[in-house]
Length: 98
Length: 392
Image (cartoon, rainbow over all chains, first blue to last red; front, side, top):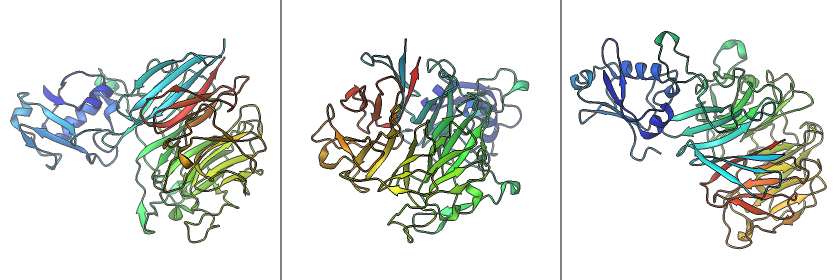
């Protein structure tokens, strides 16, 4: 299972506490993780990336394994530790997050 | 037993204030959607327990919320957690995408930017939600960058009424300080096919075919901040109000100037009269007296607070021109709050209640049509909008 950490406002919106666990079929990339996240929690569609273009919202970033993955291509494989569930994929708001 | 429910949108959440018909003892619930900007909350006239809220954030974008129990519980329409992958809902209640189809009539891609250059249309947020007068599942949404959307499935999906942006004057619309927003939507209660909208800074527009086609209705407006002060569009209209018994008479608070139209917006005349300043944001009409109107004068476009630090509502009982200051219960020194365009409303109890919210977090009530005022709450986040439901 893929572990995803959401910022507090999105946890509230999705009505979840703590990490989200997702079954991500196929290659584990940022795009496939967000696809699975939005499928499970449709209320999050549009809050992390644009509905149509799928561009990242400007004030959001993606971290994992102590690395900033924000500007990696969305179809790039995520680190093995994320794919194995050892480390979470972190979505966070830039600094204060509102 | 009658009562009132006041729906308050703030910079950091929504609050619901309820009282019985005496309007003395108030129950305050909230913050709902804590930490998010709530530009507007409004109930359906056809089903008062059906509420819609616009929740937004610079970080996370736009979310639409719906309540079917008067605000006790909320949901994102059609967007609940899915457990069966094969039955995943579309999750499109937050999706506001401008219509780009050729069939809808020359959809526009640019408007004027602050410096006069052309700029692409970009969705930012929903400013105003206006439920249908007869169908709880139909709601209009006024958005920034200015456009008009409608849902017919209780907020699950939204479609643009592209005839507004596409009617031809769009390249001359420009943002004001708050952005280029469609903030006012008025439905004629005697003719639901007639809809008025207002945009900062474009002006007022009217549709007589339920939103399919539109025309500017700005004749008589004068604005010194556009090259031609009497241009067809480009005016920074802040708010329009009407009385349901006389929907062809419109009252407008413009950037500067308080205006009146007696012909459904075809022409306007100034009724600022003896106001201390005719800049302001809100305007509203007494629930039972169509010629009694209210404004809150603000010092100027560069100083958004009451003149002389004295918070005063002004009332005209003559449909404009002759105004009286209403001060009893309002701070008359050192007051430097603003009252934003969606932050005034009236109830329809026998003694008409008038409500307004401030950027200082107060929501004031007058239970005697403006003669005296008292704060219902004093310390909310900055108030963006106030709506009132009269419950019977």
